[in-house]
Length: 317
Image (cartoon, rainbow, N blue to C red; front, side):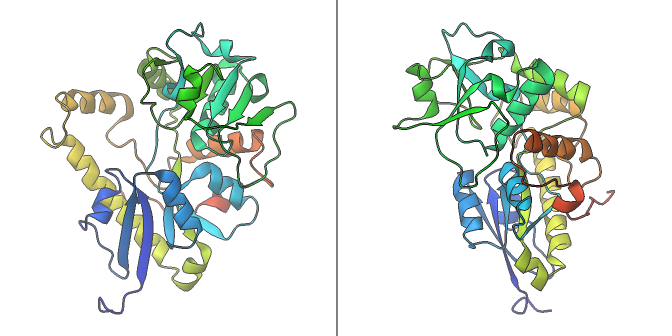
């Protein structure tokens, strides 16, 4: 097949090192013309994927689980390029009396929306690790969700009116804490967990869970037309990740002065490749987020890993 005969595979990605070799041209596909476009703002990329501008996209897992359980014509490959520990994404005011998770009971927490994957993980972790159920907090969402979900009985979710970022409104006293997927720029805010890295490392050592927020999702119509695209795109993401890990190991690549020490510390805790793709080795993290989605009312019907992900695994080398 010549280059001019190859079908175009358009892919929306996040703006990060795991995807960079896809959109800078270092990784190419054999039987498809890869058109990878990065989005610094995840929400915009998700919207354009859903609007049909891309055949595949790096997409919110909370939204994917919700949509897939409702029969949407989507299918994911087990590529997880956006993973973050989430204890460090709970913020309070600098002068807040809140010092520990149990004190969130009965308090108001600002969130982007119920279908935000960061919030899904935090609510699950608060329940599993600290006995703080979703029903124990008064949730205040900046936006409504485009899919109706059946919230657990007793859950309080209020849609905010007015303007301003969640961080700015936290500083004004509109709520007691915020759970957001990115770090606030405003001064006067601190993490609920003062040594969140130590807490997250302990969490990982005990659970072996590195929370994933995104998967790579195809429109089913594209896969019906080009079934081989799934495995070939999986392999492209795998190659891109290997290049990113090689870049991490190069002490001259990063702008951080002590990046080599950080690299060594991470390897000591998580091994040489925490960004594992494929179903095998990710069963626990995937079953956990599926359970959280069920407990928090996102799922219309029960789904399993097999329902959600094509069975593809990384090559051994």
